[in-house]
View 1 (cartoon, rainbow, N blue to C red):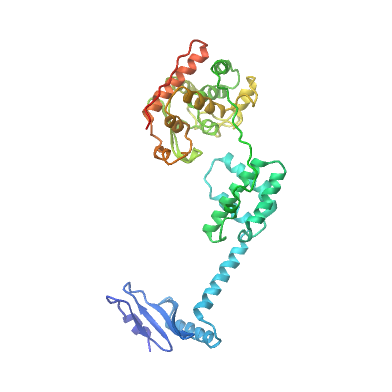
View 2: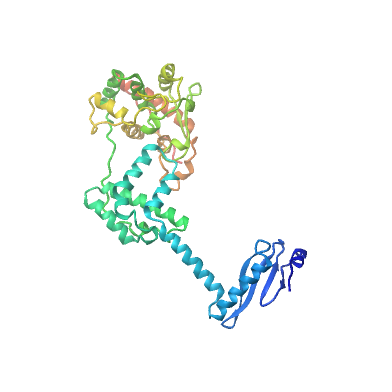
Length: 407
């Protein structure tokens, strides 16, 4: 029979060994030295072993009580190991059933490090479409049919894009729930092709050179707020996403080095981005720095300098200049640059890198670093600014591009 004194005296050896107590109870001494309680028994003619805890967390007296409880189960015709597994599974299932889709989605949203505008769009999808249908259901009990019925209601209302986005967000929540142990699978994986594809919406953009020149001249004649004026002037020169432009911070700019370093958290793809600045862009920024350089944001809000200008400022300014939303948008400056630069023969990989697009295939995955093609992009951005100057004055415009050798 074991005693506490004997247990304390046990030392590890070169191989695991066991010391018996009584009625199948033994202590196991591994090489690590941590003493582990084991109950050895037979069930249906097979030798089996049940773990009873670690000494001294589980005392000798407690280990004997746990052995005795297992012996009672054996006397009742139950396998103690299987009984423990069943009880553990029941506990997991009970916990799983207690987590609703709304609870899982709320926690998922809390853990996302995304732009404020994106967070608002996510909540709009959940609150407006998913929570009313499946929010109160246990996330473990939502099968593909239940989810499809919820998504079809959105689809039948004519909101094809909302239905598609809701499916994507639901899938992200379900995959999160799987990792947390609240669900066994993601039901969206079975819904591929089940919804009508939404029509692809292209951001309105002016790309015809003559009309681009007219737009640039209109921007030069803008008479609204000076912060908005400078945002309009800089937008075509850097062609970043509208959110990246309006939230620009002075700490990100090296005007002497003519580079703008946008940190990963502010980028859509969560990858740091470098924007080479043309001499024209640097001149605009130096002039603006004299007015807003004392603050945090390059383009501070009208009501509070502690916040950037609103997300609709540039689009509203374009409307004020006489351009409808079907003609030109803030995002359209990206489409303009992408269209013209490709037509002029610049390296497509350099253009894609400058647009900070997600890589679309295995070949392009090799070009994901922020500094890829940087020298070529510097030349491209300066040539692009010179080209826009030519369009603005309405003079003869020469090609700025050059075909590069295939990689």
